[in-house]
Image (cartoon, rainbow, N blue to C red; front, side, top):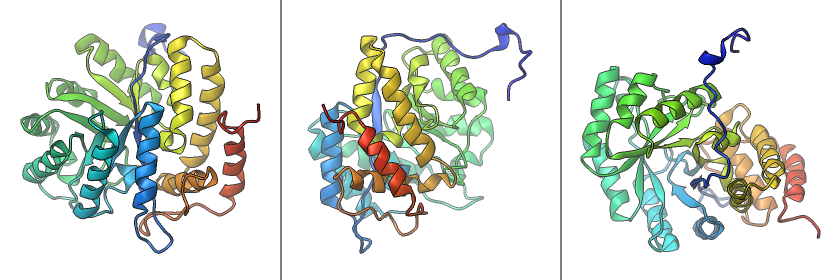
Length: 323
């Protein structure tokens, strides 16, 4: 915890950005049938639902089991998303699997980025052992090299999500912001202070750069100037859109909506954090949006007792309340 005696000058919390229009990107859950096959119909419907709510979808992210699926599955997800977005904004994870100690593989990243670009998406550069295992200046040079392929979104991923993740020192983040092709970066440390420092650096250095909060335990970071690229929003893209509209309008209903969504986030993103994907599947089934709440067999599960709590939250959603 921060020293309570810290001076006001050292306190990193930025001012509120009242009535700000937020860019919301929702990391789409890849749903499964009970026999371990992808539920492509359910996936397409959820992409469509997200777009209709006014959020941009992000596919082949952690919520889409990026490190567990093969290229054929990734490409089919891109095909479906391109069709559902009809030329609108969407993002997709550029994932390169490797092992600890592996060298950085720019060719593999470029191939993944090019596939996404051909499908009309914006690549999100997943970290890898080869990328994050380099010295700080080499990490910045790696992103500069990838910028030659085209615009992309960076991604800092805490190790609670994946072992190849890394939260960069602020100087590396500054270097990332210096790459013109990097239009923004998702920050998933689950730490407010680290994100506040990035917002301050953004405001002082490159105001057009988007800091996409990945903090599912503090989704109110949008009040301070963050946009978002969240897994939690896949549970309820409609309610996230209502919350965002309330913030932009200066409507105090924002706070009640945010509190309910954050309650859901605290439940879903408790340790082990990767099991949040099973929470999402259970929640979407309870909403009647999926036929099955199974997930990828390589992903951890939640206890069955969670369903009762999730069902209570579903009843509290404004879209489910009685008039």
